[in-house]
Image: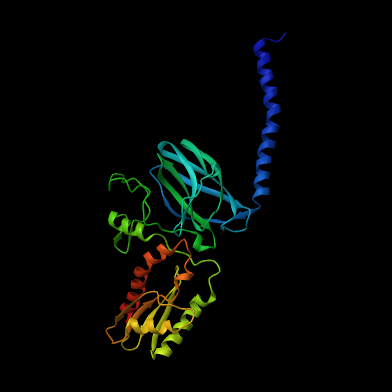
Length: 327
């Protein structure tokens, strides 16, 4: 005769034995679903990272329904975490946009609630626009450290350094144990409130619009400026194009003295181009350094006109000064 306790033990053992195949099958089904819905395996590369003491996020795999990271694609990210600096946090996959944009909806697949300790996680995200991807802890609705990443071999997708801190509300020096991102660049303290205010006002670089007219490619801009110079009797000593963001700028050095009005007048005679601002000055050798925007305002993305204009004068001065200092 079997005792009741013995019967319960036997029943539990039988139940566990029956459940094990189902658990294995369930895990296999989840893996199969990930491979079916996200058939491409992407090689990722870590970028800028900043964590509080004892915290860590490690990305182990990224799969997608497209072969590369691009707007419109949907992706699945898997990784592990250690949270030591807070009792709980929201672990989220977000994107820092490169240009001005409105708020984006956050889906349940993009974040998960975790508690203090270590564990594994997976998140899914549809890329709505071009931006720097990162996985971060959020505590009390504030960023609490994280890691940026991108696709290996595609350098423009990886944010290497960030000029801000996820812990900027802390008093300086209160957390010496914190692993911090680079906070200085060329002797400038990037976390200084005044510098942060200027950076926030300028915003992010504006990428060139899709389907930009070939007339405004770097090669054709240089050709157009060469034509302008010939028409105005100007001699080019140095010429370059800044295509790091939009609008692209032509800059360089001219022989002899030249006022901006000469450039302005020349552009008014050229079809398809316009005078959109310039910085002009004299070199120590008697030449003229300059930076010039030749792209008409009707080529600006309608959502980014303010952002383009805010950054334009700073960029013009920056590019003009780069050749003045070399002359």
